[in-house]
Each structure stands twice: as C-alpha cells, then as structure tokens.
Amino acid sequence: METPSSAAPSGADTPTALSADATYDVLVIGSGAAGLTAALALADKVRVGVLAKGTLTGGSTAWAQGGIAAVLDAGDTFEEHVHDTMVAGAGLNRRDTVEFVIERAPHAIERLVELGVPFNTDGETLHLTREGGHSHRRIVHVADATGWAVQQALLQAAEAHPNITLLPGRSCIDLITGRHEQRYSGSGRVWGVYALNEETGRVEAFTARATVLATGGAGRVYQFSTAPRGATGDGIAMAWRAGARVSNMEMMQFHPTCLYNLEVKNFLITEAVRGEGGHLINPRTGKRFMTFYDPERLELAPRDVVARAIDSEIKRFGLDYVHLDISHQPPEFVREHFPNIHEKLLGLGIDMTKEPIPVVPAQHYTCGGILVDLDGRTDLPGLYAAGECTESGLHGANRLASNSLLECFVFGEAAAADILAKWDSFEAVPPVRAWDESRVTEPDEEVVIKQNWTEIRRFMWNYVGIVRTTKRLERAMHRIQMLNGEIEEYYRHFRVSTDLIELRNLLQSAELIVESALKRHESRGLHYTLDYPAADAEPLDTVLVP
Image 1 (tube, rainbow, N blue to C red):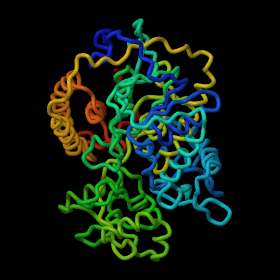
Image 2 (cartoon, rainbow, N blue to C red; image 1 turned 90 degrees about the vertical axis):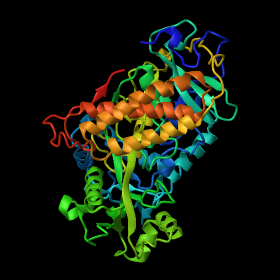
Image 3 (cartoon, rainbow, N blue to C red; image 1 turned 90 degrees about the horizontal axis):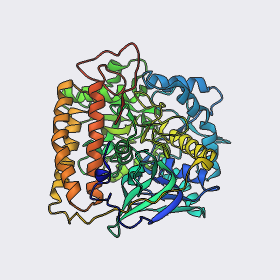
Image 4 (cartoon, one colour; image 1 turned 180 degrees about the horizontal axis):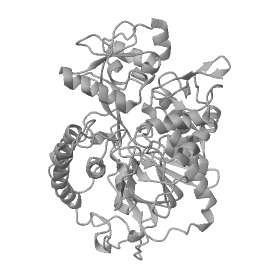
C-alpha cells in the first residue's frame, strides 16, 4: 500500500489547487470497438468523455482484417461455437463467459448493421467465411477490412451524439483513486485518470463517477507484432498499479502469418486466407508442412498450433520465413475476397494470385489482462474494463479467431448496462489533487527511452516468445528488475511525455507476462515451455494480486 506522500508520482500528490480540468458522468479510456460501444450505450442517459491516445482511430479495431464470429448459419448452433471456443482455449475458458458472449453475438451484429456497417452479403443474407478453429462458416466481414468499417461506423455515431465528448491526444498516466482525494482515502475507489495533453504538454485530471478502461492489449512489448504503435498495455499497467488483479498474462497470442518484408513491418495476412484454401509451404522443400503437425485440421488448426509449426519449420530448416500460397484459387476469387491485401502486396511486387506470400509469426493478441466479471467490473469500485485489456474468461489459453471484436461489443454494452443500473448508488466525485510538476525538469537524454524500449522488445521476443524455458524467463525477469529502477528514477525526475508513459507501462506489462509465465508449470494453449511440455489435469488461471 502506498502512503499518501508517494501516491502520485512526479509530486502529483501535493495538495495544491483543486483539479477541475474536466468532469463527466462516465469516463471511457479508449476509442476502439469496446470504448465506443460502451460510450454509445451510456450516452442516452449520461454525459460521457472518451479519451484517446493519439488519434481516435489509432487503436487495434481499425486494423482488424478478419471479421466477427456469430452463429448465423442455419446448420450452426451456439453449442458448437461454445465448443470451438473452449477447444481453442485449451479448457482455460470460463464456460459461463463463453456462453454469455456467444449468445449475444447475433444481437451485436444486428446493432452494427443498424449503425451502417456494410457487411458483405450473399444474396439476401450476410456472407459468412470460415477461419482456423471454427467448425462452421460464421465470420461476418467487410471484405478484408472489417475493423476499419466498424471503427468508422462507431465513430460516426459517437461524433453525432450530443452527450459524447471525444478527446484525442490524451496519454493516460495513472488512475485517480481514493489516495488522490484531497481528503486521503485508501478505499481504492476510482474517480478518473490523470492524462497528458499531447498538444499542450500539460497533465490534466479527468474525473467521473465511473471509468471504463478500453485501452487494448500489450502487443508492443514484443519486437515483432501486428499491434498498432500504441498497444503498450496502458490500461493493464494502470489498473495493476491502482490495485486490480490481472490474470493469464502469459497467454500471448502469436498470429501465424505476418508478412515477412524488411521495409513493411507489422502487415497481417488474415486468417481467412487459410480459411479460403491457402496452403502453408516450406520454401526449401516445396511441401505443405501442416500435414506433419496437425494432419486432421491442417492450416485450419488453432493459431497456437499453426504458429508453433511455422516457428519449428523456420528453426529446423534455418529459414527466414515460410510461404502462404493461395495462387491455386481462381484470380478473381482471390481479388474479390482479399482486395486490400492483394493491392498492398502488389505494391510490394508480390502478386498473391500467381505466387506465394512470405510470412512469419508475430505477436497478435493479449489473451490475459485485467480480471473482470460478466458486468465488466474490475476489483476496484467505479472501475470497469472491456476488450483486449481484460481477462473475461472468453479466450482462455488461446483466442479463437474473430471472437475478439465480438468480446468488445458484448462487454462494452455489459459495462454500460451495469453502470446505468447502479447509477443512483455512485457518489459524486470528491475534490481531488491536481498534478504537480514543481519537482520535475525537462528530460536530459531521451535516448534512454529509445534504448530501453528496444531492449525490452528484444529480450521479450527472444526469451518470452512462442517457445519458452524457465532459464529464458528468468533471464528476462533479471533484465526487467534492472530496468525497473532506471525507468522509475527517470519517470520521477523528468516531465512526462507519451514515450515515457508508454515505456513505463510497457515494462510493467512485460513484468506481468514473465511473472505469470514463471508461475505456470505446464504447457497449455499459447504458453508452451520445454521444461513442462505436458498439460496439467486441471486447467487453472494464473491470477496475480498487487
């Protein structure tokens, strides 16, 4: 437990003038699918402020190529979608959560259609594609750019709503809790957030009766990632520092097929390329290799299986990449299904209708995160969370393809519903302390930030990647412990910047991942360790307590 004098770093705990930068009824941190869904569900009743780091479209939602999973096909059932999700999650999922989300999927799709998302159709019905781990075609999509279409529709609706204030360019530093009240309280009650205004350089206090974290994952903790630049685990790190539990942080999903190109980093080749018949081929032997790793499901095996298979082929044969080949399909079929990928690759000199695509695995999704219940509630009063920053019990040890956007919609609405249902019990925001910069100076050598960022991402990729060992994990933890003191000292002495805020959160996220991985003495789903290759009889969550 922190004392009042150390509660808010950079001297922000000094009881100076009251902080009154902005007060809303509800504060939403994040402007992706989860955040905007929550904001829209709240805004008919209460005033909502939405904070976003950088631009309003800078999160992972806009990058999502694949689609949204829902039982809409005549031959499909909720039970089969539940079963596929549990199999992919290696039994670590919480069944009540899986059922809760999947049963609400058709409603989520209806709502998006109402908002104007132009899903692909097949005659009078929505066109459904299939992805790895799914036993049926159940992925609704907008060609291969579903996320961008969803982001645009949600943003348009939010911009048009008079009760929603959108505030881009705010880098959140720490949650405002009871210990930041003028009259100190150790209650853990969350009252909002301190955020850096990226334009003015001022730190502002945003307060509200309820706060929803929808900040995305921690993918940028790894050297190779499909995640956007801002996926630095901000919400997870802030919630942890404020006293919330996190769970299953070792379950970091690696997408099997990221474009291998030295000029273009982080370009994802969607799962649907394999779903529509793409083959994985060893460029040295010219043969499909999934027959050796999963002869029944082949390229449609869950992502952890496919990613480990590619990793194994690359290491075994000394390759830089493997080939993903869909050129045996008719050219018009490929162009129609994957117009954006086709165009992007053409610009790089690759014609996917005639030749294979070079691919490697890359970090793709954070399956663990802030522990939440079915109402999106965290451990801390007044704090909710939704989407990739959470561990809701949906994904378990490995996320089933296209369940992620679905989770955002369902839990965004669930959090909003619980806030409105309990509204009368939420107290008014008390006076809180302003951020105090009287004891900090301008940074002297910002190269420290760049160097530490690079070091973290490299050792996380090398030591805490697709295949792990206890020795590698211990080496990573040793480096984290050395960096902790260095970064904390820098943070306490110099004025904050977005880069410094992200570095601090990145290191905290890395520590949570490594600590969780060291606690799991088995291989399950995304956590594969050579020291404990077998799975335990009973699947148990790794829950860390601050």
